[in-house]
Image (cartoon, rainbow, N blue to C red):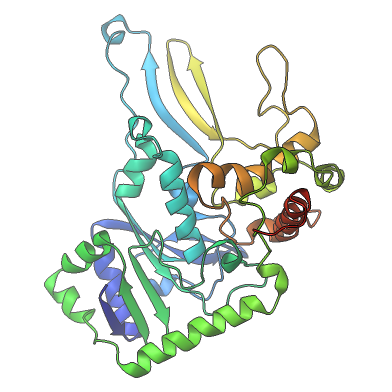
Length: 365
């Protein structure tokens, strides 16, 4: 893994060089909301933002996506229906936070966990996108990445990572794709963004910022919920917990938590037709919706609000870990900020752990 030290002008030069041949997006504030905007210059970015209101998942798994088009023309009746093209241009996300990059890595495994059923729409976009991350020396108050296996200086899912050292930036090459992107820089751009190798002072400053971030997260015990008993707990012990009834009394089933979540990936597929043509569309769906699991017969296995609330948290902290050996939450804190009734996922996870520990006779693994 190579490292370079760049000044502010060097980082801007690197951005412009990497953006050649790619459509670049950066975090910025638009009408008071932190979001992603297309950019041609790093000056358009607001790198001081802790996180965008919604995750960058939408770049790869759009809220509404046309999967194919079809028609009634007999000449085309037996032609294979090809997937809609994913991107008309390669992308670059510059300034991605480590929690969002970790979420994309988790979704990589979910959308491609069976090679025979790899989602081509997701895979095409991910393969053609360069992810340049920015470390978090000052995590926001509701972030808890370290409590769920992440880190404010984490590199999982990223191609490059830069850290603001104050007067300069430490740029780290993480992946093979990042290495190729740096090697493929035009000669003039490569010279402008070459920088220097980091010295002991630079590396010491990075370590200081890393420790500072860890200490900031450790100040609030809620940022590291105890999950030690969850992995060995029986599913039914958690499934039948009285916790869900109490939680359902508060929850509105509004779905704000699922739509802002960087790892939620439920969807519905609909065929929309008009006269003799149509299209197949994939839309985000939510386990909070009363219609989400409703059968054509009218039966709904999650007809109660309690069932839907339980599904959300069991999926994150039990079902995904069983199948993927990792927690389905990256600790970005968006749902904590946006929940209109102040349900805190950190508290729920800790209560689930307490229930798991009680069910096993109080013996922690």
